[in-house]
Amino acid sequence: MVTISRAFSTQGAVTIDAVAEALQPKYTLNAEPARAVSRTWIDTFDWRLHDAGISLRFVDDRPLTAQLPDGTQLQCPVAPKWPAMAENLPAGRLREVLSPIIEPRALIPVVAVQGTVQECRVLNSDEKTVARLLIEHSDNGVGWLQVLPLRGYDSDGERIAAGLSAVDGLTPAQSTSYDDALAHAERKPQSRAEQFTPETPAAVAVAAVLQRFAEAIADNVDGTIAAIDIEFLHDLRVAVRRTRSILKLVGDVLPDGLAERFGSEFKWLGDLTTPVRDLDVYLHDFDRMAAGLTSADPADLAPFRTFLRKHRTAERRILVRGLRSRRFERLMQDWQAELARVAEETASGQTVSDLARERVGKVFHKVAKRGEAITAESPSEDVHSLRKRCKELRYLLEVFRPLHAEEPHRRLVKELKALQDTLGDFQDGEVQREAVREFAAAMMDEGSAPPATVLAMGELAAQLDAHQLRARSALVGRLQPFLARENRDRVKALIRR
Image (cartoon, rainbow, N blue to C red; front, top):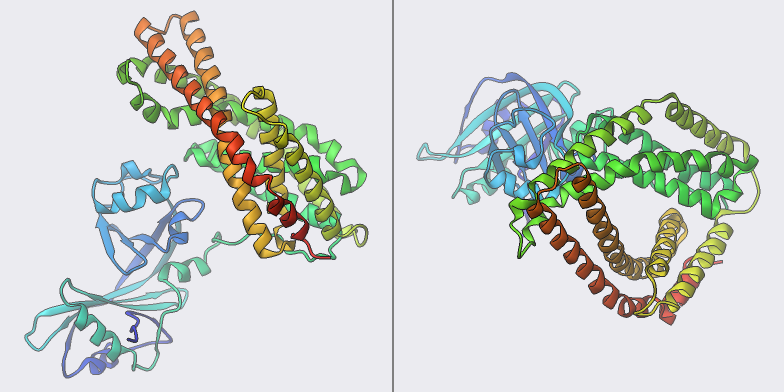
């Protein structure tokens, strides 16, 4: 069965008379006057709704409307203030659908378009309204027509769409109105994947990778300072961490000792962002951890939450001062200028394919060597060292992805992710357990820890200890498939000579 599109793009002016004529004699059209409107689309900073095929927008002061990939529309009153978390939306179906997609990100306006909208009711021979037509035109020249059948009239919706498909100037939409709006926006979703060939000089390719990380740092500064949501700082930190790892692993191909010159400054930036991010994680996971208490009452942890919030406020002041400092501004300006110079002035040297083959193999060998030495009794330091080497391997695989054969890359990354998840559980259990103990000691020193709170925090620490033990018992079993001969062969097959 052929599926008829219910969404059309308009080329030039399509008159209401032409639409009405296409639907006769089975249907008649009752058109309202066109009105000037402002349409605003809402999304997360990293485009989670767009990536999920969801359009969320409001027109003037009308209800917030989400259009799902299957065409379903959900509405609720506009959130009172942007940015808004999912919990700030009124309870209902729309919040239920959006929450698992966007959390912990905030919703923000991402593009606004001025234009006109005209609504038409489509009536059948019994003069019952069976569908609505929504005709939109934007000042940028883009036009849209949507068929919105009323509940129970899907078959009429199909017939109406079939009739409209014959109208000159209407073509089945190949994109959404959200996509069309974003096409004219200053900021839009885009892939930041590096564009280099196997023969690109290694220094040029590495500079391009580092330039992308620098852009990610810059993109997330304003959102971090404004505290829009906790993912701005997280993404900034990830870009800093990747920068430091790439400088360590392949920075020696850059000229003039750039890796050494800038390595210490990016370490400073990483250290600057650590305290707030750690506190963000504790506060984000707080309710889940409290809900896991069995002996203590979750309410006993209220002073602990207050303590975390107070310290986060203090640490954020330090973070914001650092991100607004001349030192940070100079770091980013000088760094990006140096990277641009490398890209412009480097015309020869070792190729990126040779570099990738050499360094991926080297780091994989380190991971394998450390992994083979891990037993159920290995000290935590050895497990943490393995985790760091796995993270470095992951970064290299991401950076050199454009050069890799598809199948060995996919399978190797899949196995590595599974191993990293277990290593991460082990790390989280130990670090958070020790942090809870340190927090308890600090609260007792300042007299803000009632006995019930100390006992509840002790139970939290015990649960985190048990979490780490479970991860430890799973680790050896998780290492075996990663260290198998198949993965060693995949590393060799990543880059064909």
